[in-house]
Length: 368
Image (cartoon, helix red, strand yellow):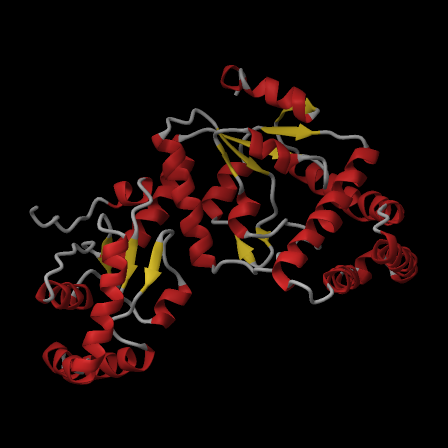
C-alpha cells in the first residue's frame, strides 16, 4: 500500500471527523485545538520555549540543532511509541503542528524511520484555525438563520434538539446560559468553542441546510463570547417565540436544575454527598444575583430553597422547589427577557407551543 499524501483539504478533515495528532506543546494545545485531536507533543513546554528563544536569537538552523539535542534517544523512543499508539489506532488520521512546518516534518521523519508513513496537514493549526473562522463568516453570508426566542425554561433547547438543522450554542459552550447554567465539567476555551461552532456550521452546509436555527442568546454564554459575525446575523434574522404555561416552565426548571443536575453531580462526584454539593452550588448561584433580586426578595427565595433542599435530601420530595422556581421566573428572568425583547424589536414570524413550532418549521422556507 502506498503512503498517503499530506493534505490541505481542511473541509474534508472536519466533515469526516478525521482523527488528528497534534504535536504542538501541551500549553499550545490547552489554548485551542480541534475536535477529534489528541495531543502527543514533539517537545514539552520547556523544550518548546528553549527552542523558540534559540530561534529568535540565533535563527532556524541553531534552533533545529538545539531541538535534536533536547530530543535525546530516550525521548525519541518515548515520542515514537506514543505516536505509534495513535497511528495504529487511527490509520486514516493526520498529524499537525502550528504551521505545518518543522515539528510536523520532524515527527513524520521519526515515524518513517521506524517504518510508519503518516501524513501531516499542510499549513498546520494556524491555517485550519483561519479556515474555521472564515467558515463562520461564510455561513452568516450565505445561509438564512432563524432565531428561537422565548422566556427562560419555555423549551427552546427542547425545540433545538428536535430540529435537524439547528446549532445548539449552549451545548457547544457546555453552559445552560442562565445564572444557574454552569456545568460541572467546565466550559471549553474560547477558541475551542469557536472551532466547535464552525465545524457544526460546516456540517450543516454540507447537508444543504436551507435554514439554520439557533437559540436567542446574549453575547456571552457563561464565560464565552459568541463570535460577533454569527451573533449579528442571528439577531438580524426573523425570530420564532416558543411559549409555555408558567406551571410547565416551573416543572421544566425543576427537571433541569434539580433532577438532571443531581444526576450529573452523582456521575461527577460519585458518593461524595452529591445532594449537598448540588445545594451548595445552586445557592451560590442564587447569591450571585442577590443584588438584582433585592435583599428581602433574595432572602425569602433562599429560605424557601433551603427548605426544599432539606425535603429533597430527606425524602426525595421535589414539590418544595416550585415556589422558588416560580418566583425566579416571574420576578427575575421574565422582566429581564421582556425588556430585552422590546428593546430589540425583532421580526417575529411565529409565536406558539413547541409542537406547533416544529410543525411550522416544515414550511418555514416559504415564509422566511
